[in-house]
Length: 595
Image (cartoon, rainbow, N blue to C red):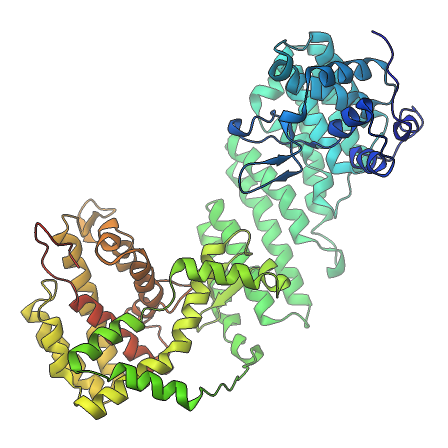
């Protein structure tokens, strides 16, 4: 091949003594020293791709190199459409001419990924060997800027060596992975170690292929055991690192599970739990909230590995520490005054006709925002308060236990939508109440009006109406404890009837083989509920009744864990609103939907 003239910006990089740089540095040098030559464009494209991942087949990107940016419409930067056969030839020449393994690995890797797609020819075996050798040389010669990137390269080298069935390269990869980890492992930084186990031991088919001897395997396991000990035994709590220790313990536990060494599984996992306890017991400054979070994490870890007896002890501690939560929490009061003209306008709208019109408007205005509106809102707020949406949120129950968690906006937009709808429902409850008060004053709204409206619904039986009437009587007397306790079970019974009307089942098989009723939350996720009420109303019902990230009224009340404070007008109004929603249901005919 004829040597190519490379851009000036690249010449300093192609030197065997030039280390501590990566592909991103080359890309930035090319951008800052633009010459618009054909070679410059080939180099810019070469170093524009991200490494260590691929996009799905539809995008046309290779299995190892992917784009820096993917747009909503599927467009990518860089795009495979920018690659030409002459560019592939240029990269192949550069792979053979370059000296520095960072450059060789990039050019040869691109040829392997894209030559067949662009030029229609398979890359040569020699190009594969060139690529594998360069990846190993980067690790062995310390030609790297960031340690974690090297493990990605070594993983790639090992996979290709196995694909080629080249034992020489397999053994070189094995030794390179082990030696690189020894040189760069830092106990307190779990991202710098564990890779020998992940790449060489975890998959038995790989360990057999690379001839990982029992001695080598034992050495890798011993290093994980030593790390677990060093991270947990210190008498100085500032030198105990449970999170890092957990990275070692989980690997060891999974290894011992495969060996059926259950006592060793228990030993390594409990050791992590004890390290958390050591910090809790010796740090008087740690808050009850942090303690609950740590203990909840231990419970999750114990549960994952079947340590049920140990988990019960931790749950007992959670209840004990949970008693201190309330003293640490601070309330924030916000006073918002609705403009009198807005209140007046709302009352006039709600009571502008007759009692039947009021009920219809009450049902329509009480449902809160749609799921789409909620998602659009939280996405718009991300720009104003980005830090808030980067964090996970824990929701605590009355006894201090974590009852639900909402992740970051990127990971859990559904959870953030639920929180927003829940908050909006609380905010709008004021208007439910003033609407009801206005209807009582103008129309004499009472239980008879409600009974008359809902009695037309086929999913509310005559027997239920007897109980509902007592509940409504208590509601209009402001006896909300009685009202809420009586009405919620009737709402659940009516929803079961609705599912049965639609041809669904309200039973499931229990562990002992008998039929038992499905939970209300399960029923509310039945497609028949959504078909009857629509997605947004079904979502509203879950948030109010069974969603732990929402109001969760039904579960708290029926499980006997509801704080007496929730038996108020706001909660009772929501229950009344749902009861009236059920009253909208009508018998399905050939020309009508259910609702």
